[in-house]
Image 1: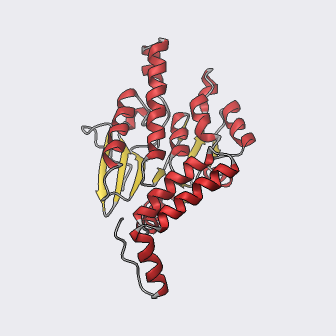
Image 2: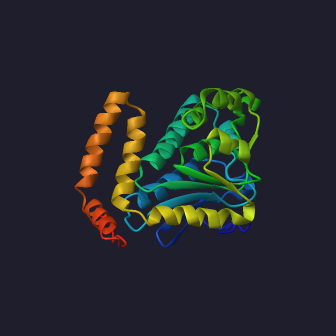
Length: 266
């Protein structure tokens, strides 16, 4: 997928589907794919449409143009300078970010360029992220007098506390290799290898049971907010339910019989 040829007349988010993979491409290249209210609404609508669709196994979030996503639309924010607008904007954005973790399909961020402020938040809220070696990341609101509070929620759940706070307090960029070391992204590759690397990662997930993937993703995020004992109790119940699924029975039988599993999706 190319990020160099934006589709100017299309919606804020362009969706394309291929063999179980749905790609949602941010389409405001002239505004560096900033998250206006309309962009947030378009992403929310696509997520809600994809979540119940069993034909979609993996979702990729990408961006047209030079940037992955430059955060919130500062011009829109200044043009609507009242607290009610700001509260609504951040509430809607937070809901969209949460929807990424709540949908059963794993979501991969395809980061080919800069990801700043809420754009960095978007990377942090995707389940996985693959970055080009030229990508850069920052929570740069502090540079204009605005602490990136909502991006800090996702960032602090990806990075160590001190690494997250350094980004939030300084607004300085980190490069892709630093993002990899600190846990913001999973893989870093040359730009021309970005799509093949994502295809490889997505293909590995698509080859697995959709039942196990969906249950596992939900369990992973829920247990993170629990105490240790509660997390083990909840995980044990999920695993017992997973074991009763048709896919688990088929997978184990296939392993014992030394054959390829044929997933039923139940």
